[in-house]
Length: 156
Image (cartoon, rainbow, N blue to C red; front, side, top):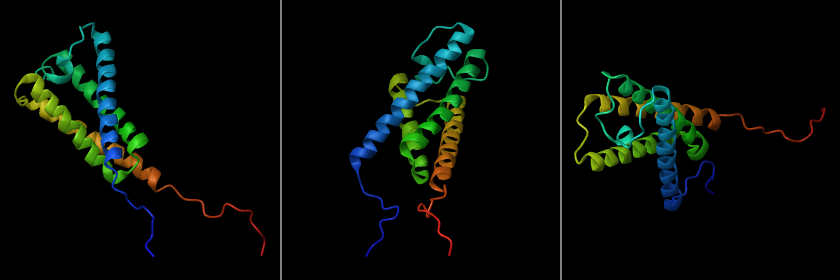
């Protein structure tokens, strides 16, 4: 008789819905973080802040604040991994998927692959941060002690 502990059932509908959910979390919270940054420095909001690789840079204050928004967004998405994915071994998969679709979106928006080193550095750092923190949170939950004795204690 096979054990069903931690059994994994192939459910493509669940996986696709989790991917869509993580993309929604990624872009909605990135938009909120960028709106917060824009309100600090009174700049106009634009899709360029999300998809254009020229915006992310170390030279300007707007570029540094946009990088800060991307990094804060990776922390928020790590919480999304913890709440909705709940499996430590799947955190890296979903993190890479979210950032891969973001790269495809940037490619379509700019009509070519991003070529700025700062864009690649920020996205690799955000990927690492999101995966490591998400996996840490999920592993803490997975390794939580399971109470075995839930009944009344008897003196023997």
